[in-house]
Length: 271
Image (cartoon, rainbow, N blue to C red; front, side, top):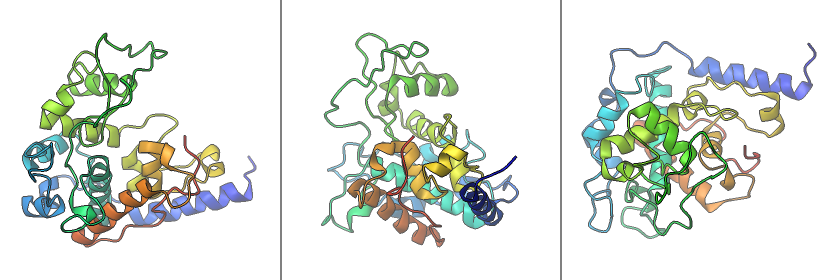
């Protein structure tokens, strides 16, 4: 089979990225060995501020308990890769739930996990064309939880995987902190074809297709942003993308790791 020069170059880049990231899974080393409660509280410095609607909701214990349901999270690859993945996950959920602003105390990137539900949703996020996960009458599938889970086609499979009825009881994602963190980790770990999982991207197990190469979907934090909300991609200097990057950079420093390449998705096409 003949490959184009651009595809061959991209495949070589993938191999090199993977070589630095792959490793044995760190079995027997829980997430708590990489992120202590003290570090968690330093990362989410103002999550329990009186101004935050999610005050006292996103507890360290709930995060740790939820992570145990996804044993590959933060356990794949080298120590640096493991820490970087956790920092990337926390950076993304921080943007999704941010209460920060440019002149906020301790900076705009100290206000992650401030919200647990979308404020003033513009719709009920029901895709009526999706018959596999039909909307339940009177229910809204607006953003909830750390990843701001949205749409019936996400609530349905998330609930099925995690043991709750996501279509009839979507509110549980903003009422139960353990379920909330589980939905965020489910989204992070689950491949949704043609999208790879965020996990595979951050640990070097993303193998780009020819369509990915054509869309310039290069491995890195920017591709994770594309997976989560591709509407932000393909735009120069998008403020939302920059906010995600700012959180990730702060957290990577706290974990004492580098961020890796390709932080933005400015030159990527969305899925």
